[in-house]
Image 1 (cartoon, rainbow, N blue to C red):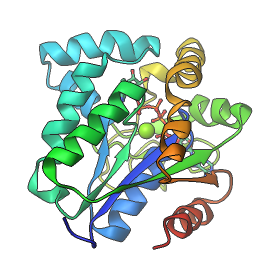
Image 2: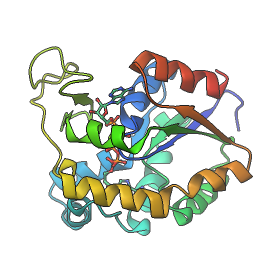
Image 3: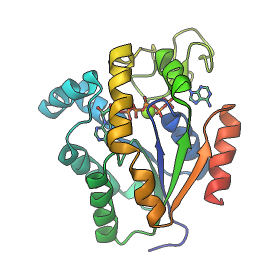
Image 4: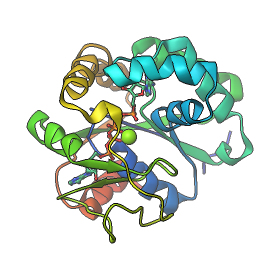
Length: 219
Ligand code: AP5
Ligand code: MG
């Protein structure tokens, strides 16, 4: 176990800016962003049976079964680049996932996790998701109005053509928000009990929100 280890979790509703800020934190701290949403979308692009099954849940805005994502994260956390720390974005999303994560980290002998809950009002979430453009290659998020790419419809980082995710349609957005309230929001209480939770306001310029996260972490 190392004190320099940065084991971070970004909690927050769909559209809270977890992916946007996890990418920035990854660059700042030199540790990987681990997004279960990006990993599941990659398994689908690779055409694996798991990817096909996951897509059925994702397109409806439902959560993928716990055992599928727990397996993916356990394997990912064991990779060498996660030794100095990681930023989990979109995992855990249920109490059983949080308990499984505690078990995996204990088994790997890892330092304590720190959790930042990014709060954004529901109307803003809906507006953000409705106008989001996503890079299918590196997972970067843009917004047609709030955070447009430098060149129309092209990722600033890798030049790939941007897409609108299938689950950014209105019916799927509503279902994702319901899933969040029912299954993911209780995680704030779970982490508060163990004294590792900080909450921040996720509304404002990207740099301002990043500063709030870094200050909440005390880094
Ligand atoms: P996932 O990919 O994790 O989606 P999500 O949680 O629904 O979150 P999003 O990616 O939509 O939002 P975000 O918080 O990353 O916001 P972003 O930075 O993009 O999961 C997709 C699906 O996979 C799930 O529905 C489920 O089916 C499955 N899945 C994944 N993990 C799972 C798990 N652990 N268990 C079970 N199933 C799982 O920002 C959103 C928009 O806002 C962008 O347009 C961005 O440019 C803009 N924006 C960001 N910050 C700001 C700001 N400060 N000001 C203005 N605009 C901003
Ligand atoms: Mg995301």
